[in-house]
Image 1 (tube, rainbow, N blue to C red):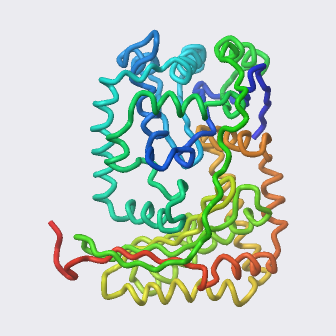
Image 2: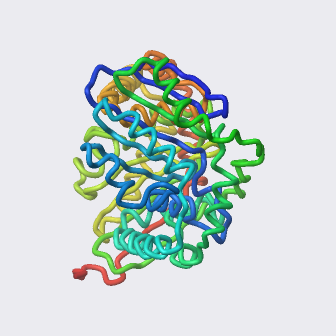
Length: 417
């Protein structure tokens, strides 16, 4: 997808993506996430993301929420291990309204203590809700096991203890340290002239002071990885399992190769190897998928499955067998071509979701200060060789490097009500 970029005088980067649609999308990404938190303040980045909608120096909560919703627009936000993002979808005439609100939320939120108290209770409910969903909770626990005490392993939501301890000073300290203008990207997709967008970006955001602190968002060294195997009993009806390991960063030359392998093994669609083997052939797992998440200095590869207690060992055996196939034998020419064809087709179809594309492009600007075209991405995929995939599989799927976490029912075969 075509785009143009510009850097404001204070370091904020603008990316504009042309579109003929009547619907526009905008996002504001900040290179600050849960990995930047102090150990005793886990969940703070997510807490801030909630609180920015509560009050600013010129708007109360209702005025913030109604600013876009009254014109039929959608406003939302999310936090990851490394990023915080607010985004909106709106009719083209409301770009100024959107940018004005973004600037107000990011730079003028006041985080009142009465709103902090209310939002603490909401997030505690959110934490409890996730704990009630074993398929969600096990992935969080697995990441914590994988990084064992490192901030990357901590739950983005935090813990009841940490969330309950937040003070207003904690919020302002985090923002001062990590909300750097040169670690911010404004993305806009719509039927706008790029020069006009630069003017509007300067109008709304150039007044933010340029960040001079060069110490923010330094990746904390990850601790040595030691594979672990754990089984935890819970009041659930079936076994939930995750198998995986640390993997490649966003800057690794192996990122594309592992992405291709992940898609072949357990990616989107019903024809993945794990789905065909465990669900279609043996009927032992309703949910089976693999995921690869790269970070700035490391990554996570994992396989999640859910199955009946008595089928757990067979599911583990079949998963390891599929991994062994990819380690032991290179893909044939036809298999490799089909895998690439499927992967590139899914990438192309994803371009239909313009908001997700804008978010992805904005993140690429933060990570690489560039965005690869669809043709460039396809060329990278088709350049991957069978021998390279074999090397990646041998390293990533090595049994000695794999960790395993299982949630098993505390009372097998009984129905939990």
